[in-house]
Image 1 (spheres, rainbow, N blue to C red):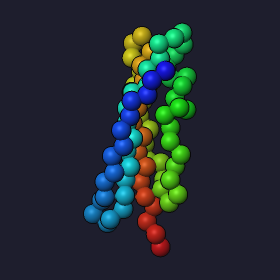
Image 2: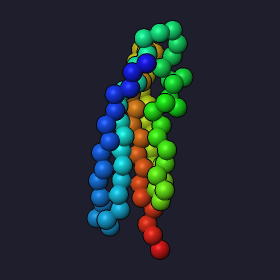
Image 3: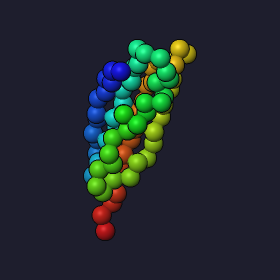
Image 4: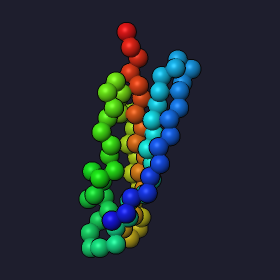
Length: 76
């Protein structure tokens, strides 16, 4: 199994941080790449909410593209 990913941080107009991790998980053995999704889902940082998780599987089911976005929670 190989995982190629990158992380992008941005700030909105209120100064809140957003983190997006995206990449590709590929397997070269018997099975379905989606079964290994838990290997690409990161731990949620303290003070953040998970906003979105997007997954797309290849036709041969050996490759899974993913994108996970977390948004900072406003402090009171």
